[in-house]
Image (cartoon, rainbow, N blue to C red):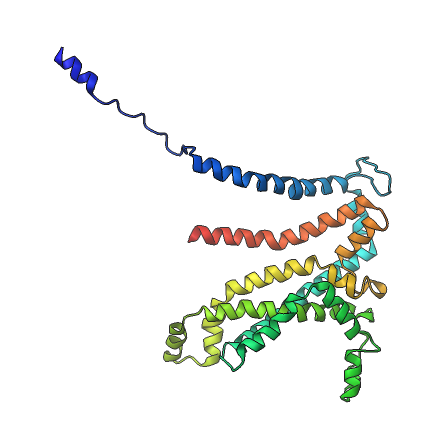
Length: 313
């Protein structure tokens, strides 16, 4: 009898919790409730609209009256045969490469100069960063006047005896897109400078001194020590600048429009005019999807690289 009482009094062992099962706690429920509206908004207003745009690009809605007759990739084939779109892709390539290279070179040069702890550094830093506070619309209006052949920069060249440098800028069909590059570079080079300056200030002085003790010259110090350490900054700048250049719209629409012979035209401007002026909604949706793919080719590898870097850490 006593043995039975003792066995009854023994505590019952708790059932083992399955590995990997997460206990739902009030904190988890609160966190889920807070992020659910954002998830739903992103699902509907981003991915939902992307899906809707892709669907519209596959139908025959190229008039005011909706026509959802399925035509497959006909709009994309017609788009590939359009001369204006071919020029737009070429302009986008020239703009992206030139814009990124100039911003990286000038931004790094300015950052290295400011890193020398010169006098009035904060003043120069503010001056270089000021264009970033201006919208692309304002930049486009200002540089449209500066690059007008009869005023602005050409008048300055005449005044200082450099008339041979006068140019048609964005009115020249051969180099029109480079006129837009100048305006975009003026606005974004200060931002790249700030990125590189933060990277330079983040390199410990011990690393620099160790390289100098080992006999490295200043150029070798930059080429073999500092530049490799700035690789993440460069990658980030390339992604941000490339993303801006592929989707550039407000600068071109306020500065030049399509330009003579579509010299300054870009896919985003073509999409805007095709959709809202010509009412070719399916054709405009096809241009939008192509733009999305171009941006994805730049962004997705960067996200994969970041994910792999985080896993390695």
